[in-house]
Length: 297
Image (cartoon, rainbow, N blue to C red):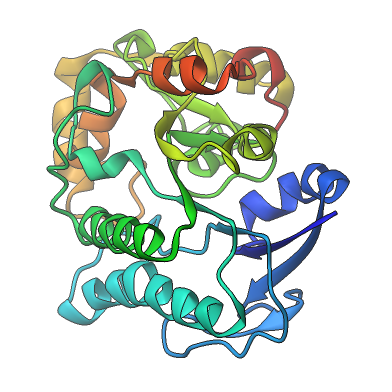
């Protein structure tokens, strides 16, 4: 059984995919939580690894926040870029793995709206999150080539699963409290991914490598997702607000942090943004789970 080093293995992703990974790999997690098997803050130190690993799944990262200060912006680069450099430095000391899988993000494209965006799109992301992930991708590409490591870069859409953080978790909480509303009947569509598919695709990646968008085939609308959540929570399907009401409400939300949404959030809720998964399906003969058929809160 191959040894797998998993960074970020005790968070949302790790909690959901560890049972799947453990069937095929001897998994060691590394990070800053008490649950991690190896304790290390990759953002500030080169970890002292004691053994060689065959596969690395590097999912540790800084996300789900909008930085307001230079110090907050710097954290993204410390975690997402420098953390990657420190990890690779440590791996060199014990022998590089045969395969390295990096969890990047669709944010590297810098796209706010569009349909079926594929891997040929330029990396125009300008946020600290996007730029730090682009830097990490570039570093890993050079590092893997130099050390003859099979590199896979996954750019996942919003990952869906139990106890999801970020926008998905906020949507669930909003529906629970009766504070979530569809805008324009929730017609905008988004690419989503069942969290388990990161583990499901991993065995196909380790020998092949490549750069891939990863998402499901259905690209559900917000309305479809809200309906599914409401049914599971035993709540009524959220009401719909027309744009002429939503826009002034969003403007108010720009000045009240506790408000359900603001202008930025309104854009995300009303603009379709979907990504193509044809490359990963074609190259790896892999097919994703359907979010609408498999998501359980």
